Length: 99
Image: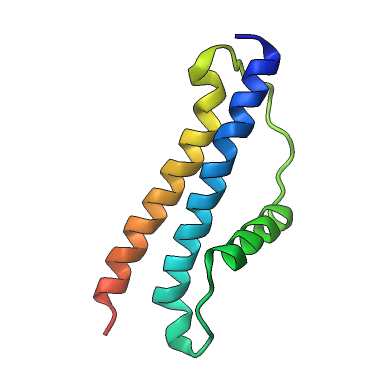
């Protein structure tokens, strides 16, 4: 896989990852913030908050990883979706324990 194809695949996988993270944020907001009196947010607002969070917690660049092949390009996508899915499941469990 060429570097151009690898970059294209990474960008292609970033969009669904960001949308899924925004969806997770809307669910967590609905479960934990809205009961405190703040209004619910939609996916567009959550996506904006995801962007703000990315700016606020910007981390220095990691060491250059080997991104040859499909799995190398998909690694950030898998990490992001896996992390978001774990937060969604944990949030759902905690919300179920709330009165």
